[in-house]
Image (cartoon, rainbow, N blue to C red; front, side):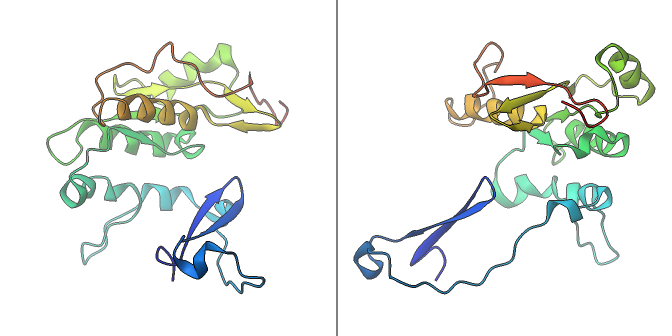
Length: 193
């Protein structure tokens, strides 16, 4: 049974299985039969990220953000939709949600840049797409680790959360001037790094 006999974590495209120490004395059996479903991120749509509320009040996507505090007593203080936030409609919803989380709180919305916008054109793109709210942090460039590149919202969001966790989850210290675990930086224009 998951989370009783074993634990599964998703790590860099692989599922890692760890047996509970009490199950089978912590010894991995010779054969394990497992069934699973693989998430295909290429099938996620912008509409699913944005979400909706149906006639019965069921919420999906970013419409669920306002439910986080009521359900878990946690404030989602950093909002991100890596890759998708470069789409103006997603950036606009992130802006709206960041300005009013659960009636009482505000968050920061991390906005990625589209790959087809050059650095020198970035300020004009932000102005044209109305990405100008003080709670929107518009990010440019990718961080690299080996052959992989990561959207800046992933790196900055994780860094912000790491710093907050050193203060029991309170966002009271800036993540600025803290090192990121990357080995390089790049931009992608026209599919080329």
